[in-house]
Amino acid sequence: MRTAEDGWLLPAWEMGSLAPPVARGAVLAHVMGVTATLDDALDLPLDALAVALARNYAEQFADNAAGTLACPGCGEVLDVEVPVALVATAGASDESVVTTPGGQTVRLRVPSTRDVLAATDDIDVAAALLARAIVADEEPVDDGGERALSAADRAALESALDSMAGAAAVSVRADCPLCATTVSASRRWATTSSA
Image 1 (tube, rainbow, N blue to C red):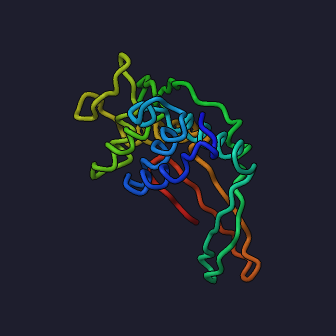
Image 2 (image 1 turned 90 degrees about the horizontal axis):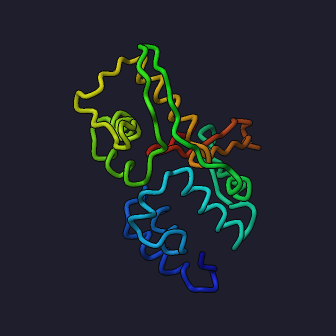
Image 3 (image 1 turned 30 degrees about the vertical axis):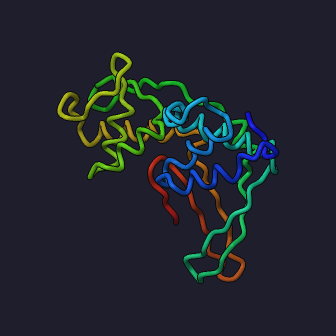
C-alpha cells in the first residue's frame, strides 16, 4: 500500500472528483494501492473497501477523522469525530444464508461499488441492490421475475443485508449544545440518511 509520501493524495483527489460520489472510495482505494486495478476496487465488497480505507487513513493520518453535522433543530454546525481506527479493525462479512418468512432460502453477499453504481440507475434502488446481492450458483440473480419475493421476504432480506454492512455502515451521533437535539447520520450502501 502506498503512503502519503508517495504522492498519491493529489492524484486521488483529482481522480475522485471526476468519479460519481459513490465510486470515490473505490477510486481512492485503487490510487493508494489497495488493489492493482480500478476494476478490482469496484468489485471489492463494500465492507472490505471501508476497512481498507479506514486502515490506510488510521495508519497515515490519525485514529479519528474530523467531520461536521448540521443540527436540524437549530442549524448549528457540530464538530464530530469518526473513529476510523475502530472501523479499520472490523471484520468483513461472508455470505449469509437467510430463510425468508415465505420459506425461501436465499444466499446474500455484500454488495460492491459496482453493484451500487448499477443499482442507482434503477427506479427502485433498494430492490435493484438487493437483486444484485442475491447469489445463485455464484452469479447474482436478475430480479426480472426469476425470484418472486413477497413484501415480508424482501423486508427480511433487506434487514439481513443491512446486518452484513459491517464497516460500510458507519453511524455518528452528537447532542447539540444549543438546543439539545440528538443529531445522527449514517452512511449505508447507496443511501445516506440523517435523523
